Length: 172
Image 1 (cartoon, rainbow, N blue to C red):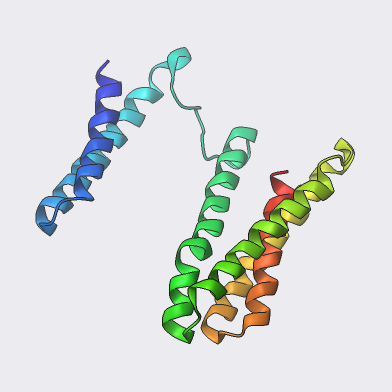
Image 2 (image 1 turned 180 degrees about the horizontal axis):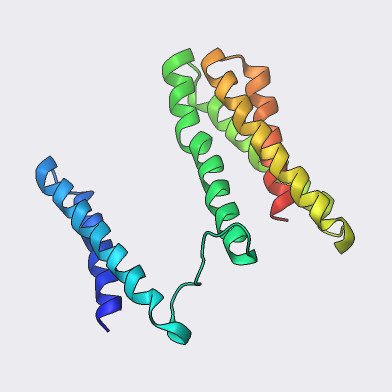
């Protein structure tokens, strides 16, 4: 199907851009790849019952859209500190790999403990738990925006625990 080939070629072009050393070629590959992905979604929209993606994948008014937006923002929030936090803390404040690793590990421990805490919660509390987890994640991300440049270990640890605990509430 031409629709599927557009998606495959678009993804392949973007992947190829990641290993291309010439910036002009890499730029063209990314543009070509994005065009292929856009073409895929335009064709997919017209296929009715045989669509590969939901009709409104990012509409926050529907369950699918709200869920997709939540998953996307959660991925952004956890990846930002998990990937770049140790590097920034080492470069800005001279923290050792062990120290930054322990901060990241504390986030994971907090996630696990919060998951255990709410795993058997009654369904009637689910909405409050999800909202609480989302607020904790937002607080953790906002706290990191202040704590990483500041460099103090205690706030970094507290915001890591807050972020991890929020994920534990949302994803038990």
